[in-house]
Image 1 (cartoon, rainbow, N blue to C red):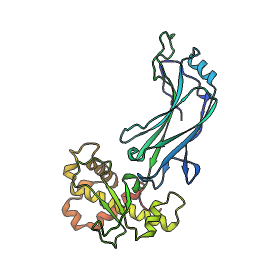
Image 2 (cartoon, helix red, strand yellow):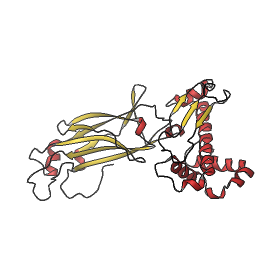
Image 3 (cartoon, one colour):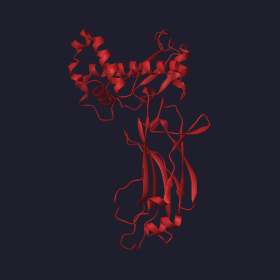
Length: 297
């Protein structure tokens, strides 16, 4: 939805800018993105497209910028959790209809991104009249679409490796490598390793859409196990997490644990040992309540 903030200068009528919803390229076809990209990981290409229909003359009249001041649309993305900003695609205000494509760099996307579209003044104006935009970068129209990158795989890279070479029991289907210190940066702190011998799980994780019931169950079971591992890691270091930098893995793990468990501090080391199954039940239920794992209702 277009922004409705009050700006200190004239802006065009929103009816003169018609922006389509964003779509995503999947297996050679453009499909609506909705509000989330399921089963996404940091190796997944994210190419997005939208179309714009405008009335350039009406836009200039509405903004009181009929003097030929350079205006352009800017399309891009920003990570809403890490605050990183991706490169913009610039389209001059000229054509009445056009399409634009952007690519999101998976290594910097974070868990939630905002897809941005703006119409801006590109150059300072020396003698504007009262109420007219003056400074380069003034935003005359904008909207932003949040896009959640979901699934446990969205939190960290995933690799298919020979478990024996990594010293991991080859009978295991997956293995989560976690940082030794809670102070390590959240980005890249975890690595999910998949065993190529478990062909069904590998196929399920790498598939982007149209999962079978069996594939969905495999991914959801793994998600619950991953959340269980992260929460137990955080509980074992709980007293250290309070002083962690906000961009650290310790802070991220602590935040996840607080969402999953009602009272993390109640799970002292002694209680975890004595009631491990109770903890697992609470973790799985909490993980399901925030969108990870299998839903039973």
